[in-house]
Image (cartoon, rainbow, N blue to C red; front, side, top):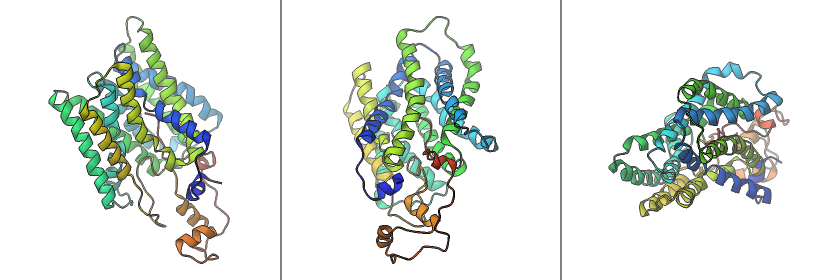
Length: 366
């Protein structure tokens, strides 16, 4: 049974699903802490180069063993664009911004990605309707961002805030590119190839700024954790989470990550926990939940919001297959034996990415 059908029937999340969900929520809330620590011992190019090189070295063999690189070269232009907006530019901007911003502040600003994604999807031809609730979510979330931006901009660090918001823009753009231009490709191969390309891009700058002395143990450990845990391992675990609970439930971790980032910043680095940060957290979280709330199921329209459109929805898939199950027919107001179209009842061959349990539309770990 596919996860879409399982979700449609309202099945409970398994214990394994909860374990994976908890792990991913913590792992994707940790990068900001590790970047903050690593920033104190290496340059930005060295930090990004180490992260992408180690992650690529771990993921490339997996993609090669699964023979997923066939045909990838035909999409090389969009692969380069995806690598630029999802990895190459954001990770450098993020690492530079955290030299002046706290890790908790950075994590909260990045939490605006779902809100930006909704706006981008709508502006670039997305068909998902913006309801009153979703508009309210956008305004509430933007109010939370404004609270944080105003606090730091007054302190003279407007550029660092702008860098993080550019990172959020890149993170929101990446899934749109995958969904619209690279959806037929195995996402593991896409990310492995882009990580490898990012390593080549940063190699010259990293060589020129390589530290003259060995960094501290804390810095080396942070670099290793950032690459191995927060990038390579997180990527594999996220696939398992999607296979276990479905893409719609899996993206809920987006709403938990900021809390982890704030908690780690306060507990480990001693960063301040102000009333403004707490208020902004509540506003951004509430805004993200409301802004990404899907509209009522539509047989024609499919959502095009980053993180929510991980693969074609259950209604779309059943329609392509030319049949609906009896419960679905009843919910749709159709007779039990009526078909939606005249296509054969046997399902057509699905893209390799779905057969392998690796839905398109999910991006590299942040």
